Image (tube, rainbow, N blue to C red; front, top):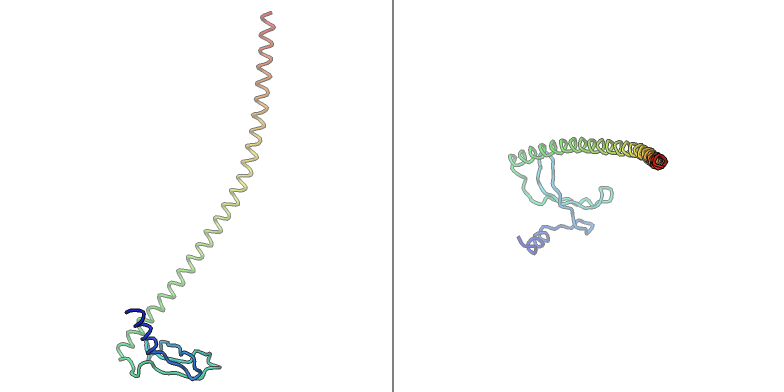
Length: 148
């Protein structure tokens, strides 16, 4: 359908309530009228004008209502299952975030320890280089004295 035909269908089926507002077009989910469309005033119940009208004048066949209610029941079960799974995934994500934060903190701690160890090793290497240099100098002096 083109957009203009959709717009004209909306205008054809549009209703105004007694307040002059565009009525809501909703779907009934009661046992007797499952899947049936109706119009009602868009205002909250306390301030509503009470406008209410079926979109179609006939009730749906009982078999259609039964199929719709069965499908709606299955959909509701699936929504509950989806919400359970979503909570599980959210819990897993939270646990994973918590684990990552713990690992990050441990890594920072280990990194700080490793930096300290590296600094100590650098100091030892510097001392050893100094000792080797002095030892070489003394050896050269010793060799020069022996050769004289």
